[in-house]
Length: 492
Image (cartoon, rainbow, N blue to C red):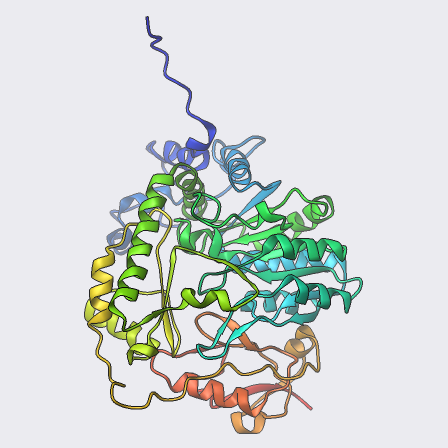
């Protein structure tokens, strides 16, 4: 005779924090606390009209019994399940994106030394961390696809050389995967860092889904990284601005953990959004239990690439990754496309796909676009392929204009913190050549800084920023004005 008892739910199939928020808010509460809308959908009609009733009801503050207060709270259990899912010693939920994770990591590294050996093509939030921490940066330059203007990653040999030149460094900081889906050899990078006696910190913002399907690359933690920043909202399925920080079970965990916890409290809002936290809890469960759904996503991305190759007009950027020694694999959920070979620039392709076909892609440069497929998403590859190949070729029969080349960075004169906090002046861009930049400026997306506080502004950089700003869809993050007519420099 069969038992009538229900089989226990495996722990990773639960969502303790999200369930606790739903369970608590299901009651009829008189809410005399913040947030000020008090879940009053009938009173706050603009907000409820935008979001619906449920988000207002679920938008509860922190420090509530049965949700996040006390030992072994639902939030504690959710954090423990996330650490287990990603193979971490400890995980923190972040509500200010992977940018917060990068700032935490750099600030915590300051306790280990005064120099950070860092990949030059890191996200601007890592540079923010340098400004906040006062760490000196010793840069490792990535490989470049000069034709497409794409920065990839760094080799273990290049990282080892930079570490040898900076004995006593605090840590090594790298980025993988790149915006275009290039995956570095994290195991070799970890061996290089550990051989020099420092932890390896990985900005894996674009790889939160890694390791959750056999056809995806393994996670950075699984390959020996010590601290990993994960932008879970990107391809992992949580809400925008939610992310995680994972501490590995490596030789540096004991020394890093207390510093990370202190800096987490320094940077995390004391009113962290329950909606964002709950979405992280649910994203973890979906990734762990969603191999079949991820397989559908992989098939869709494969179909997109196959359609691009079959038509012969455009090219798949990742097909050329084998030319670069730093690239060990490609993220199969990224579909990077060279549009210029098909007679249209990336910014124009992105604009037309959005306005004429209601298709959004993630990244555009003057040469390419990148479509991303979230882990578990099921986009229509036929719709994308048909719209892509319906794009006009305004350059057909003409010589394509010169691509906007990535400029080399200028010489370093001051630390990022010294330059950022120094008295500065906004001067006409032409007069900034030869002066020390007070700001971080990045052609965005992808947000990789082209000039940092403390670096000398060159003529090549000024021309690059002006051309980028003049390109439809181009934007220079950090610039004082949209056209980059002025630049802020350190007073002489």
